[in-house]
Length: 483
Image 1 (cartoon, rainbow, N blue to C red):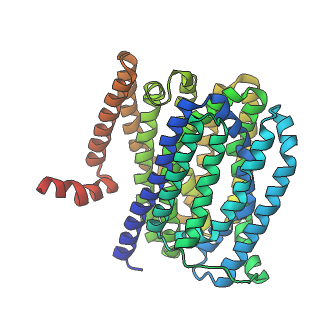
Image 2 (image 1 turned 180 degrees about the horizontal axis):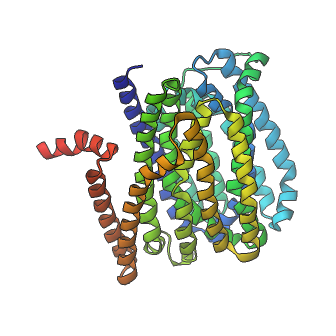
Image 3 (image 1 turned 90 degrees about the vertical axis):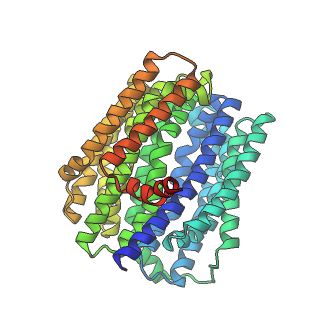
């Protein structure tokens, strides 16, 4: 694949991947704002208590097969059918396990309402498993245009129904049905608009081949999901559903930008970098370009959210959510380097070192135990500060191996990232100062902060010659200016 063809494919993929996630996460964000005004923090906290069980179950269903299929250049019908039937069988088994465990989970959190909630929500496992292979095929083709269409219909319909239910007093069930309907429509449309159909095939050879690569990623995924969701369980158990609601919403707000950045970049970069993995210089050159652009956007967005947290919360979801603000500010520093973690770990997947991937995840979960203990004994804020420190340590663990495999060391990465971080920090200080000294109407303060932050980011991107800005300037800004 030539350099120009690869570049065109990457740009097209990024555009449609961005559109897909903008539709999906943007609609979730907007619907979440409306629901936060209609519902109470406790109702969001109840959903947060179930997060770890659903997340870990989804990892068991996938078992690393998605990454294995994408990683394999010549996936066959046997491969796809084998994964499809395994996913479906695993989902049914896990649904039964969660259904029968509902009473025990309810007793653990001392929340009787959790019994019907988890029995209903766990059906999303079966629904999502039906569309997993279909979605993987589209990802492998870098076909985000069709994914965008499917996501749009699912997000809009589920959002409208969820808001209507909340308005008419369905409470926490409006959140449950939002999740179920979104996944149901996604799976149905993936089958309607995608050509692939399973045959009555199940190959043990194919299963062993894919599982040999995917098994370690599966265990890594389980550990990863346990780590990122254990905080919900700890807060729900040792504090209250209301406090968990504040943390949940702060986490969602703070991780909305970095998770979407990471998803957009990873969905496009992973299959493309997999195709050029043997050309080390080309791999490293493209990797550095992707990382630099990704982290500039992440630093700017997260610094901006942290600086404008109070007017943001007051404007979007109201005064009853004000206790969310300190959590949101701290969690922004956790989420800030989230895409950096993902990009470094992708190198291990592409280089077929899922064994190292698993070892790293085990090491990190052991390092996270003190952070969890801090939260139990000293409160949620101290726990989040521990998460920030842990995130920094985890970065050095992740990036060490990137230095080994593509000769892009932690030191070199930091040298490349530091000017971007300092620029974003400067913008953040300016925005925070505006909010601190101007105690006006929150919406007006927020609008000024957003405008100034956007202008500063554009000027800095132009000054330091960011690739993404040059592409936008060439394709959009210059065309508008010429008119």
